[in-house]
Amino acid sequence: MTEPMEGRRLVEALKLMGQILRRHCIETTTIAGSGHPTTCLSAADIVATLFFTSLRYNVSDPENPNNDRFVLSKGHAAPLLYAVWAEAGAFPVEHLKTLRRIDSELEGHPTPRFKWAEVATGSLGQGLSIANGMALAAKMDNLPYRVYVLLGDGEVAEGGVWEAIAFASYYKLDNLTAIVDVNRLGQSAPTMLQHDLETYARRFEAFGWHSIAVDGHDVEQLMDAFEKSKNVKGKPTVILAKTIKGKGVSFLEDKEGWHGRPLPKDLAEKALAELSLTDEQIALARSLKVHSPESVVAFASNPQSPVPNPQSLISDPQFPRYELGQQVATREAYGDGLVALGKANPNIVALDGDVKNSTFSEKFLAAFPDRFFECFIAEQNMIGTAVGLATRGKIPFASSFACFLMRAYDFIRMAGIGMANIKLCGSHAGVSIGEDGPSQMGLEDIAAMRAIPHSIVLYPCDAVSTVKLVAEMAKYRGIAYLRTTRPKTPVIYRNEEEFPVGGCKILRSSPNDVVTVVAAGITVFEALKAYEILTNEGIKIRVIDLYSVKPIDEATLIRCALETNRTIITVEDHYPEGGIGDAVAGAVSKEGIKVHKLAVNDIPRSGKPEELMDMFGISAKHIVERVKRLVQ
Image 1: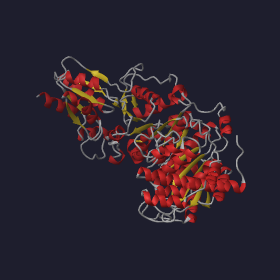
Image 2 (image 1 turned 60 degrees about the vertical axis):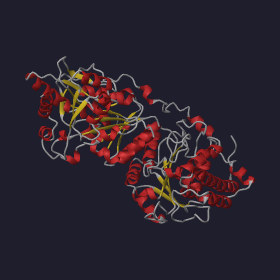
Image 3 (image 1 turned 120 degrees about the horizontal axis):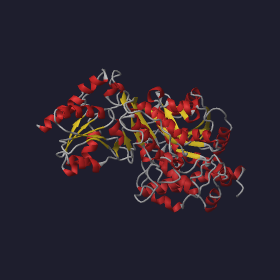
Image 4 (image 1 turned 135 degrees about the vertical axis):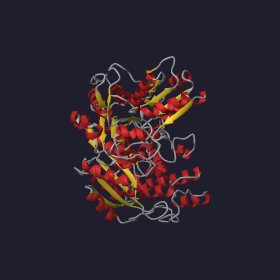
């Protein structure tokens, strides 16, 4: 390994590297005709100093579990991210010119298509939560890597950032360093605090952080700050770097109106002239190397390093056995399934948002206290932290009420873009929760979760199907959502029954069925009640438990509909838009099958579960009425 530079030569090389990075950002955004060059220019010295003095990383092995981690929370500075990795030797510098092209992995905001970016960023305010998860994983696995996250000052206005700040302090994440690029200017106006580093520092310190204020263009101050952050114990560190937006280009520096605007060719040439370097200066800058790849490789011999494919460790979980007819809430069975999985796979971890005694993730806490993370009432940070844990080989199960997960929907959306391997459980879904009223009723969650690319959406009706579907979630590589119910429901499946993703169960059928009724979760039992009522009146219906809403068993639904007068009734404890009815209609419409939707068609209110299901049109009585109307 080449000996690292020292003294004035190192300082000069870092300054020059900052200039090289600025040049790349001007050139590539001008070629692309779009992008955010000015926010890249402000952070160039920060990134150059971090990458070439403090980051311990094997550039040729981005999967190495012992690499330090870097998260670009201000994802619009993607050209800077790509530029520094190119200069670090990750890929040829010439490839930077493909920025934002449809055939390039160098996208406008980072995604894991660029293999040196583990997560998708760009929706501001999420990177710190993700870094929290990465830092937690290092603590769990006793690994020496550090986590660095670069935020913009504008995004610090996001509430999710302060959720993450509080969480990092609570868990004493002293292996985490956040850097705030305080460049004063947002997209359309100056930020609230502009260059007031003192107030930023007081706020972070009030949350239990160690703060260091620096001139973000002074590489010696930056080097000193990064070194000091490594020695802080018991609390995370924030480096507040005062910078100038557009730094290095006289007509851009600290000027409003340039956010998200590439330079036209003539101005780009003028800017590059101001940033010009001699061949000797370029050679000096490029003699910098990312720190100590050999030491990172040596760390890889640590037997506690996480495996690349955590799912491969899953053995056959030993699930609890339930008796037919036993009354068990699916939310309680979720806790049982989670414990069984935890025994089978040490990479299973659980997170909750202060409702663990309602979601029953408390069962996992009791069994595996070191693998459970209380996130308190901060669902955005909970999801971001889960994403960070997943990048480090954990299989995180995050649970809350279904309606409260919607508060974190943008985090879930970005997790989908990043192809994150996270598992979500939304409990207390639908009007069947009863007296708590509409603020607590998840009635939009199926629609929201179906919309996430490559997600799976599962909705069990009893304890057996729940624990089996929890196992299916863990096996699935991607975002999996499980919807659970508050009331107890009878066990209707034998313990040996299997529930493959993409399937459904035909619970009642005969050659004389006049219509197919498709239900899931709590409404399965309303459909079974309706079956009994109609059978006593000489009318036969087919009943399907659609436990897998996405992917959906299109073939079975079409076959059953064709055998029952091309008619399906869906019944769901969810609003009609985007729920089970729409999922079924989308699956069968090409065959000319009619789908009649029974769903919660108005804003509900407090009441007993059975009263609410009847009032809002999803009880057995309404199924019977709809079947009779169709038959007549």
